[in-house]
Image (cartoon, rainbow, N blue to C red; front, side, top):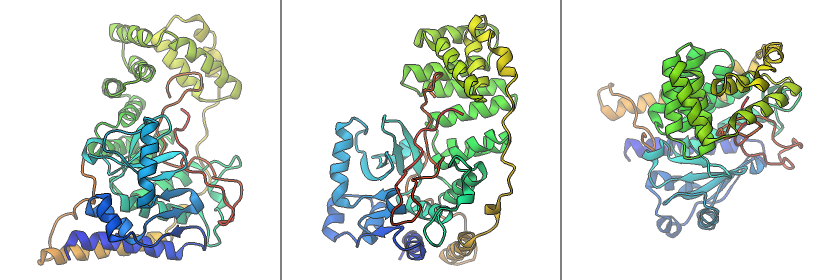
Length: 420
């Protein structure tokens, strides 16, 4: 057995251990796919290995589903008819309304598994199918207690995940898939919003090393650089995001951010380009700003800044400036975070890393050696008025009303979170 096969089998064994240890009824599995079905699927060996162990997995009582090989063909055809897929895409699962897709060329998007939203928006989700499933199972071990009920302390009074709890979930996913672009992007967002812009910048650099064509990572890097006072670098990042967007409204949004990081004639030229792409851009910002002010939403500052970057003399926006300045600043998440303490999965990770290091040393025969090879994959808001296009990648609220595993409603992902 090669080191690669041994590593893959070890990951599958860890999934099996977590499935066995989970509360009864929370996860359900099917038996292995037949040799004929595996051969007919034509999947690469490292992808097919999951179905050779389980021909379909239901996680979190339907919160995420790995489809059987037989179900993948109809699911792929349905998504293709809805014009959600690219040539060579294969739907292998679902998480809420998000499709889990294996693309023909994972190097092109930076992930072996891509998340495809209902409107066709794509985001690189996981470096391999096996690591995706392992990360989801480990994440759910944090969400649910031993009786299959949610840990209420993870959620605030509105049923939304506390920022520190969401960080813990994302870090748990990254513990099992360090090269997963979308979870790391979401972690960077949380770090920036929590005032940790330098940490966010470091995470986004890692995302873009893996997935250089990930539009929203370029945008988020621009926002992070802007908060760090790196205006020229921010403008370049916003330009990178705009150049990768095929949607005129979204391109206008990115260019407006670029204008906010620019000065004088450069800003004016970008403003003209924004209005050529979206003549109603500033009006949409004003409408969104008034709504945000009514709700006391701190997003009002962003809407005002973008509108004035495009049209500095807009009287409607200028008349609202004092109301925006009077808004209180968002409070941080100051509650103690008991989920920063090591749990049983942290202990498992420590042991697994030690085992991987031992395997690496043994494979070289001299106790030395470099990094294990990466599994699978390879390298690789629309503005105003409540419109949004940011990719998801993590939960933002408590899924379902019922709490027992046997009756819980599936939630899926949070999809594209509103610009906050």
